[in-house]
Length: 61
Image (cartoon, helix red, strand yellow):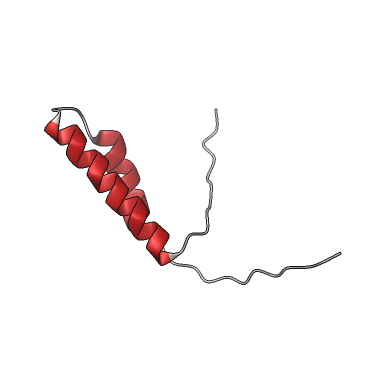
């Protein structure tokens, strides 16, 4: 199976919500003595992403 990359467009406040939610989940896992490897990996990906500006052009038929 080939790894596929996905790109999503999110606003800054949405990014902050994602990071806060992942941190909350990570803290719950730590409190329950469970592994946080998967959450850590996703958290690093989200926090280390580069910002890219782009235009959205809406065309009506």
